[in-house]
Image 1: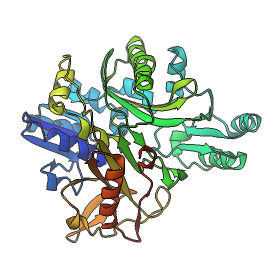
Image 2: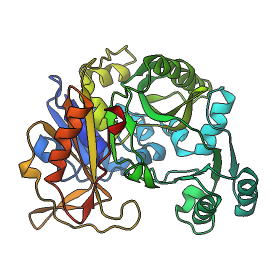
Image 3: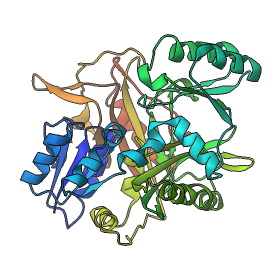
Length: 419
């Protein structure tokens, strides 16, 4: 088979790399891909991820068997709808189903309607009303931009001052543009966070192994929210019983609810969850694989990934199995200053000294004058597998040191909760 992966980040690198492990797959193309993919045998196609017309033309010309859409933006622009209208198979939700990620206000109303546990919240369109509500509720409180903001449109404010600043940035200073035309003020929940992804086809739900992401920029979960600074799987502090409860009371009702709303979902449904004293509650839904969770979850998939996708696309039941032992750990190398102001174009050195036990997933890299340089906030992720988290952390941080550079940074506490 020939497969097309749409997107160009670390998640898409992981998806493409996993597809190449399948005996069924001959060639994997990635559009637009990135500088690190070709070393893994992935063929990059210089077509933007939002250019449906040229993506479809390429898929037809190359006789692509199916495509997988990685990022949220093309999903919400309707790339899957466009592919299906052109008679092509594409794995990912249609535009109307992807709204569960595209609008937090929609997701909140949806969860309320289908009795899916989440934090109490209220949505606002003007600053004065939001500020009055904030003053009434006090801190800690969570402030979210309604639309897409690359994982950064969330402020977990521990003080009223911090909350007011975040609200001003979103509603008065246009920090996230149209994504913050509506802002959600949400109850702060205490507990351990975890990510639960599942392959979904209509009402059928096939859960994956859980992971834990590290959203804050700095050690000790300090600093601003990012797209994710690292992840690990499994998460020993979350019980199997709690995960089963989350599948039965969150993922399955969500899948059924989307069908009932005329928004049947086919793709990867991601639930960002928190284990509270009252049970698991939803922090957010995403309509695609998480990043960086994908880079630590897919290596644990024992089933043939291409076969799983193909069966879902043909409305058949897939065989979804994950490794029962060992751990995976992934650590992000980011540009200094990320997620706020940062420079790009700094040379990456040390990759040639990494051991073979490490997988490298590129996110923001490019070739410039025959040198590999940084081209984004998150540059790449290193991932390894080991028998224990202690062993994985010890080995992977030795590898991260080989990439040390004053223009880059990484957290040194990824996975420490699981040791």
